[in-house]
Structure formats: C-alpha cells, structure tokens
Image (cartoon, rainbow, N blue to C red):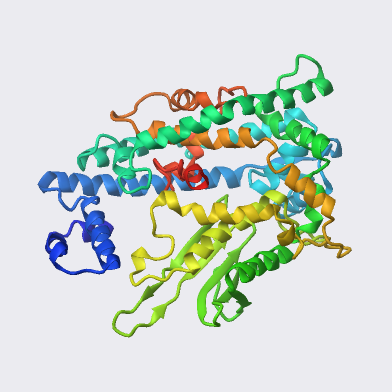
Length: 520
C-alpha cells in the first residue's frame, strides 16, 4: 500500500513541481521542512527510479516488510513458549519471596505444579540475580541467549541474512554504498565515521574501568567459590549483585516495598505536574484494548486538553517483551479552522505483576524504565506543530532518545523519591540513608553497562555498513563484530542477532548508537 503511494508517478510529479519552486515560494521554516521531508521520503522510497528498478524496489520493500514481521513473530513465540519448571523447594535457594510468589502464580496460570520461570524480564532478571543454583542459571541464560537459533520453524538465522541483504539491496538500488550510508543521511550523526568516532571514544574511556569491574566481581566470586572460579555470563548478575550489596548494603528487594506501582505512577505524574504544570485525570469512558490498560486525559498548565495517555504495565501472552512508547494519533493544527488536534499516546512496559498477597512492587530498574518511557510520552504529548508528520517524536532518530534519557535522571533525586516512595505496608517514607545508598551505588558497574550498549552499537554497524551481501555464519560474524567491547567470556552457542528486534524488526537499523548519542 505504501509503495502504491510513493511510486505513484503522477503524485510524485506534483510534489517535485512544488519542490523545484521552493526558493520562490516564500515558505515558512515549518512549510519548508515539511516539503523537504515529504520530497525526500518519496525519493528515498524509490520515486526517482525508473522501469525495472522501480519494480525491483517494490519487490524488495515488500520482502523487507514480511521478513521483519516474521523475525518479530518468531522472537515473540520463542519468548512465550519457554518455561523453566521447578518442583523442588531446594531449587529456589537464594530467590526472594517476591520472585517465588510470582513463579507460583505463573505455574498456576499455565496449569502446572511447582514454580515456573519464563524469559519475560520480571521473571528472568530476579532468577539470574538471586538463584544460587548455578546450573539452573546457566540453563535459563542459554534458553534466553539461544532464542531463534534452534532447528525449528522459529529459527531466525536465515532471516537475519535476508534482512541484512535486502536492506543492502534497497540502499544500493537507491545509489548508496551501504544501508548505514542511506540511513544516516537523515540523522544528526550524518555518517558512519561519526558513529564509529563516538563508539570508539566510549570504548577508550570505559574499557579499563569495565575490566576493573569484572576483576572485582571475579575476586569476590573466587573468595566464595574457590581460586579457579571463572565468572561466566550466567554468573555476572548473581555475583555483581553480591558485590553491590557488600559495598553499598543495597538490594532491589530492600527497595521494592517502597515502589508500589500505583504510588510510582502518582509520583511520576506529580513530577510532570511540578516540572511542566500538566495534570492527569483517569477517564474510564475512553475505550481501551485490554483490561490491564488505563486511559488518562492530560491537561496543560492552563487547563486545556493536551493528550490522551494510555498506560499498559504488565506482561501477558502475545505481548512482546521490553518497554516502548507509541503515538496512536499524532498532533496537528487544522490550517483552515486553527483547531489543534491533540495526540493519543501510550506507554507500554512489562513490569512485575501483583500477586494474590501483594500489589505490583517495582524494582529500581523498573522505576528508571518508567521514567524513560514517560520521557518519550512527554515528547509526544507536548507536540505542537502545524503538520502531523513533523510533530512529537517525528524528529531525527538520534534525537528521539534525548527526552527519555533526561527523565531517567530523576530516579536518584531525593526530592522526587520523597513524593511517593512509601512502604506499601507501613506507609513509612523511604529513609534518607537508603536514598543516599541509591545515589552512592548509581555508578556501580556503569562502565560494564556502557560497554554492553557499545557492543550492541558495534554489532548494528557491522551488519549495516556492509557493502557486499552476507552469506557467512551469523554467530561467527557477530562474535567478531563486537569483540572489542566484550568483557565477559564468550559463550559459543549464544547469539544476539537472532533476537535483536531493535535493529532487525524495529527502527534502529544502523541506529542503535542513538541511545549513547542522545545520552552524551
């Protein structure tokens, strides 16, 4: 359908006629930007191609559409189908009660005896952080990190190759050497040289500290397990958590009672009221797509209607993993009437669910995720442009992550935490010394975390700066692509590419560096 629009010769002739006269047309900056954006989007979607090349573009873009869909479906199916069923209480050693209760609840939902752990973040993360049984940690880690590599109908290895080669073929058909060159033309970074410059600067700055962090975690593990112990990827969360606790006496389970979801939501909305003057009012009359979803009307500081905001917080079957913001309806101003048509925005997460005894209690990481996605939603809600496709988050992709990264910083602000962080049972305000420990520990393992992001950026660029089709071994290519940023020992069968939806089925192809770009 999109091709029928962008490859329509008569329509493009009209757009080009306007574009060719733009210097005489006395346009406002916004009109000029719109014209440029529309013209470029047609050209970048094959409008200037002729004859056979045009049909080739049509076939390639259709194939790309189907491949991204297939990639995402396979990833979702593998994530949802896996379950680690435990039946002996001894297998739960080390796990906090909240994780055990959630696993019992999942087992009940799935109709099995015992406890069930899944590859969804609220189940996977606590298990990798707290479970004492190393073999089980390894088993769950390998299930997660070999997703879509198995010899079955959800294997993505061939799809990865096809996606990379299809994007390359489209870019070269349009006159570019690589897909990265094509994509980065419309980015703040402009070219792959600037992306690599950033990634290399971060590598140089963070690698020595990241190696030191690994050595410290390994030293603690050897103290506990013996002098020849090697910290493997399935050990990292477990022992680094022990080290963090030893250094700062802080732990997610200690903080969780203060982060009851409904209170966190009030806190985050209240923060927006204090920073920006906006207010939120739940409206149950607005239809929603699932019973877990709430709809809010958002009002500006002068009381005018600003936006509808949908919140969708918990995992469920058929919902993909991760967290994101979506605009269901963008904002625009009707030029004839002057009416400002306001946006409909959603924020979606996969937070720890409530159990029969406890409300949904978040980890500190989940609080940060909430603030991150909320930053995106603010970007969407504050939209105030004449034209829909210039409004809200319709900015250069490597600017998109700026409001989200900005809002994350409030997670360690005492003044903000004091507005909502009360113990869900006693009502006690989070103690100052606990807040201080959060602040003190906020840079714990920051270098390792930075290099992890850099490794994803390197992998993304390796796939999309290629100038020749790929027909090698995906796993081997991946290991070579990001080896400079790897701190932990390499695991032979693990593969990120087959489940890396951001760069294969999302908008981050030749764009994963955007997180670090915006943060810097």
